[in-house]
Image 1 (cartoon, rainbow, N blue to C red):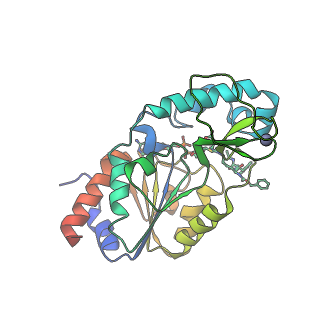
Image 2: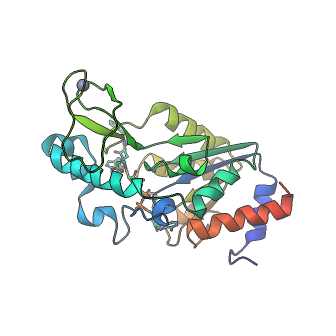
Amino acid sequence: MSRIKNLDIILDKLASAKKVAMLTGAGVSAESGIKTFRDPDGLWAKFNPAELASADGFMSNQQLVWDWYQERRSIISECKPNAGHYAIAEMETMFEDFALITQNIDRLHQTAGSKNIYELHGNIVENHCFDCGEPFLEDINPQDNKMPPCKKCGGRIRPSVVWFGEMLPEYDLTQGITAAEECDVFFSVGTSAEVFPASNLPIIAADSGAFVIEINPTSTVISPRMNKVIRMTSAQALPIIVEELRKRTGK
Ligand code: BV8
Ligand code: ZN
């Protein structure tokens, strides 16, 4: 039997749930080989996030920021979804309404087959002009450290991620908030819940009466608000939950 304590309570809640929502963070991609941000060996152990993941950072050091994203693009281009991503894609087929709200920019959820996804922090695959907003549709070779000019205005091309101090995409955030307000069960998976407003979603869900579950090997600032915490990795815990739920409901 699984190593998940109180699994029966979780399965009871899921078996009767109509609406399920899930917030994912960098921890879900850790087992695909993508470093998280705040873990000891994380991306930001070496760099100061405000310096790189911000418009000011880009304006004051375009080449450094460009190189940092190119390095991340080449790492991500080699990575594959892990068992956690696939389990999440399967969960989407098991409920009337399943909303996946991700902070991740690597698009591994899409590759794993998830469909109903709200990307709160954009993605590292697409690019646009920093100066005029024009989408930059040409492929970018992650090995190329030359920054291409905007086709429309000759301006500076940037990755279509959301930087610190930038607004999140309104549609995705609004949909994410509604999903948190209306769901029966909310999962917070692989996130330190340090970045606002994404980090508020599990709290909105808890305040709205959802059964809130955290899947994370370590505790976070929101752990005390959870109904259940599973101190395992996402690639360990999620496949067990899916398998046991299938057995229980035959879904
Ligand atoms: C905004 C894209 C409004 C770029 C990112 C002071 C107080 C409070 C808030 C603020 C403040 N000052 C400023 C703010 C707002 C700020 C913010 O929250 N700052 C924080 C740092 C304090 N937020 C913003 O600026 C947002 N915009 O608020 O706009 C506004 C704007 C203009 C005018 C008026 C209002 C924009 C935030 C988006 C920033 N962009 N990324 C890029 O990636 O380069 S954030 C970055 O952090 C990533 O997107 C990442 O996803 C996100 C959250 O991190 P996590 O995903 O949680 O990753 P982390 O490493 O932290 O944690 C990993 C977890 O996984 C750990 O808990 C670990 O234990 C666990 N784990 C590890 N392995 C596994 C695992 N779990 C499961 N399985 C495993 N195997
Ligand atoms: Zn332009």
